[in-house]
Every structure is written in structure tokens, then in C-alpha cells.
Length: 431
Image (tube, rainbow, N blue to C red; front, side):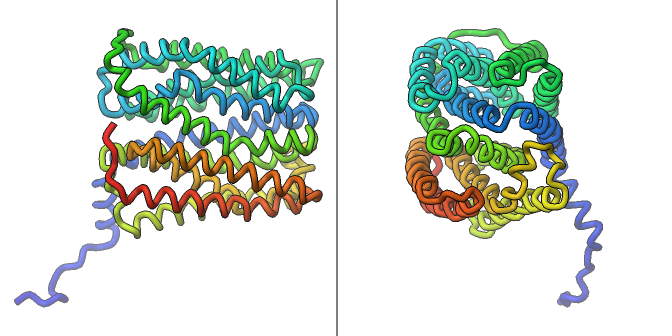
């Protein structure tokens, strides 16, 4: 009989080598994707520094809030059919041409809904702060120029062409950064002047994305393929609008209750928080693709806890590092940003909690539980609006307000976790 201590032990370096060899494809794909995220992070930071220190704080707050509204409203484009296009690229890539034609058709049909929703948003939140033409320009840039660029990235990621998607992400971020740098030398530093630069930069990005990066397939309208997936796409569109509503509605509320200057300070803090989420989103995207193929991969509690703990540690560490840098060098990101620099560390746990809520939404999408996802996001949007409105009306000190956001996002995370992990007990839904 062989004794336990007679079994030859494999050296640690051999075990590590075996682990890497077995997962070489996954690691290569992740490195390709994360390189795009890191490049995008660098240029996004340059873009943010240039713009936040060129516009006044109030104008930056107006633009950031209008842009957030545009991101939210852009999710109505094509009634959410982008989700079907992404699933097709991931699972049935030969049908990309047919689904791209369907996306273009539904995008045209969704324009009246987009216009009506944009007009209502302007009337409710921007009618006293921003001219309708400037708001329309920002919405046009976000929904009809930038959103299709995101579609090109999404399709490339679905095809597993992470390197191409990464290059596109870097180039488009560089184009925006270049536009913000040129804007520094423009005679007028108003939000009206910047709107023209913003449209131009997104137009160049759109031409680049579809001229060089979108897969070449013949466009074919095949309506019978679309209708059976339209209900799921509508769920996704509703969920996406609700997701960005609960992610971005705080900026609208701050503008409506606190005014443009407070909205600018808040937008600066939350933009720095958002920058920490860029690498996390790469991980979530790849996890979603794996879950589409293996819906039960999160069956073990150890895996669930490990992933959430990793997101918590990475997100918190990133903001902590930024807060320490700004504590010792408050002008590191520019004069305007220095006004918000002391507040960054007070939002220490906000990035992790926001990223975890976003991760929960991605889990439900990957498993085809789109209706539950939409209901969860609607609940979170309502809860966030109520809690933030209460804070804005009760708390006058900005530092205290930012600190209390940690508690607000903790409640949102707990509510999202309860719904998400209850839903994960059910079988995944095939789409």
C-alpha cells in the first residue's frame, strides 16, 4: 500500500505553470480586454482633467448631468435590441448581419420614443438651467453617435475579439481627450461651445468604429428572427433605462434640488468614483459571456463570496489610493477638481457598492432573467431616489452628504443582493 508521504509532491512552480497553461486562452483574452480598459482609463482621466478645469464648476455640472441623462435615454435606442445582437455575436456569429439590420430598423422605429423621453427629461430637470438646443445636442451625441460606437465594441467582445474592442475603446477615449485638450485653447469656455466639440468627437468615433472595426457581413432583414426576441429586448431596454436611472438619477436630483454648482461638485466626485469601475466592468463582461455558456458556474457559495470580495477590495483600494494622492497633492487633477478633492476619501465605499450592484445586474442578464433584472432595477431606482432626496433636503453640509452616501449605497447593495441571489436559485432561462 502506498503511503501518503510516498506520493511525489509537485513543485509549486510546476503547479503554477500547469494552472496558467490550462487557462492560457482565458488569461490572454482577459489581458487583451483589460488593456483596453486601462488605456481607456488613462485617456478618460486626461479628458476629465481637461474638461473639469476648463468649464466652470457649474457648467461642468450641467454638462455632466445632461450627459448622464443622455446615457440613460440612449438605452431606449432600438428598444434594447442590442442585447439580442450581443447574444448573437457570442453564440451565433453567422447571424450578425441579420441582427445588425434588425438593430438599424428598430433604431429608426425607436426615435419618436427617444425624442419624447428627451423632451420630458428636459422639461422636468433642465428647462430653467440649460437651453433646449444644447440639451438636444448632448442627447444626440450620446444616443445617436456614441451608443452605436458602444455597439461596435459590444459585438467585437461577443465575438471574442477582445483586442479589437480594446483598441477601439482606447482610440475613442483618445479622441475625446484630444477634443477636451483642444477646447482649452478655444476662445469661449461655455457648455454651449463644448457641445459642438462633443458632437464632433463622437462623430469621428462613429466613423472609426464602423469604418474599421465592425465585422463585415451582408445586412439582411429577417423579421421572423427578431419578433421572438423582441420581448426579451424590451425587458432589457427597460432594465437598462432603470439601471442607468438608478446609476445616474442622483445627478439629476442634485441639480434639481442643489443647483448647478453643487451638481458640479457632486459630478466631479462621482466621476472619480466611476473611473475606478472601468477595470471591474471588463471582468463582469467576461464573466457574463462564460455564464451564458455555463449558467451554473456560480452554484458554489465560495465562488460567489470570492468574486464579491474581490470587487470590494479592488474598488475600495483604487479610490483609497486616489484619495491619498489628492490629500497630499490637492491640485494634482487641476484647480477646479481641488475643490472636490477633500470629499473623495469620504466616498470610500461608494465605488465598491456601486460596482457590486452593477455586477448583480450583469448576473441576471447572463442567466436570461431579464424581467427579474428590470424589477430589481426599478426597485433600486425608486429606493435611491427616495433616500437621496431625503439626504439632500436634510443635510446642508456637502462633506456630510458625501459621507452619508456610503450608508445609502449599502442599503441599495443589500436590497440588490437579496433579489439577485434569490433569483439565482431558479433555473437559468434560455434566450
